[in-house]
Length: 171
Image: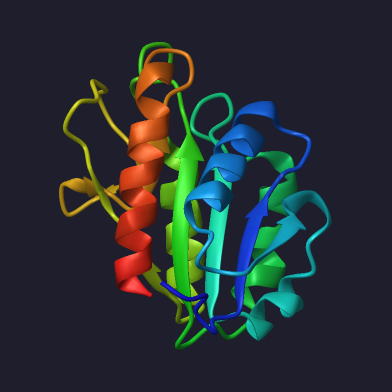
């Protein structure tokens, strides 16, 4: 498959170990796309309008919270127009220690990006996970890719590969 002429960005915090590890594997599995890597901690929300596809990663902090740098971006994100753009979300969570907030971050981001007119792509099954509740579950599936480095690290690579194949089909 030749590289698609899609302007795509891979957005995550460069300072986070697990999210960065996942982002590297995602980039390796999406070689067909030319991805511009953007550090979420220094993002300019208005720059996102230039892309056709945003692949956005975030860990869930504490009791279902977004990392501070994402929280700070919400007002700016809510003011941009992403109508016609596609957003694929990947998140990091811990289903054992935080079963009542597992992976909430990508659910929170999905709500924000949807409010901008963007279409969320890349939903995944909740099968194989054990948790009580998650804001990232809509219509009985995750709004994106959910990874649990603490409890299911051995499944990350296969989940990423499968999700990336799905994203290729959806773009």
